[in-house]
Image (cartoon, rainbow, N blue to C red):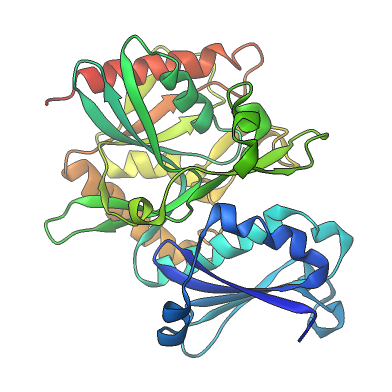
Length: 348
């Protein structure tokens, strides 16, 4: 027991116990910047929705490769995730993504839609405002587009990030689609941040591999009360980083079937932010639970896309072109300007 440490955390509305071997305690230290820690009162009165154990001896796994990560579902509905003890898993991504996969599996079991993307409340200087959700895998251009929008200070007064990486959708009693967050912090590439930002918040940032390509930092950006408030969506957009020859920087769908074709394909041009290269495909841009429960997720996704389009949510694609050589800066900037124009056309 002295070799293990427990961290009860809130992941959205789910309670997950994270149990970590002392050899990986440095990874666990980042949890406080990323998630809300649960209080003793919560622990005493609520059963966990999921358990994640990191650093188990590899001999306990049924299959040799299972040390990379395996998730079991108990009879009472609790998910248990296990990762072994190996130098190759000594990376914070193994901590964060297994936790979020457990969260997403719980969300799918409830008939709700997990989302791999960002949500921002955008307020213009003319008083117009909108909640914009951008969907896409790593390197799709979500954060770059929001950052470019934030730099249009002549027209934009505020870009408030409500969800940085993972969230979920629900449909209220009156048919409105609302979003919930999972994290109070962000695990982001240093290259994605404005120059100097990470160092200006150094007193509360945790840096991972700052000397390497794809260096990351864990920085808090919100509070738990804010991320679990239901937030209505105005725009639900797939971040297309690979389509070079485009006339419209934003294209909207009229039919849920057409939207589902694009979202479910999950295409992106990999930019070295992961181990992938070239044009890749990831079901619904979400390898964290969606692909493991694809059949059930597909039915949920179609229902939600139809509810959004029928309810007046603007569902479409925003062309970030981040994956195209020469458009790394101009692509997200043009996408941000197109998004600005779209928000200006919204009825107050």
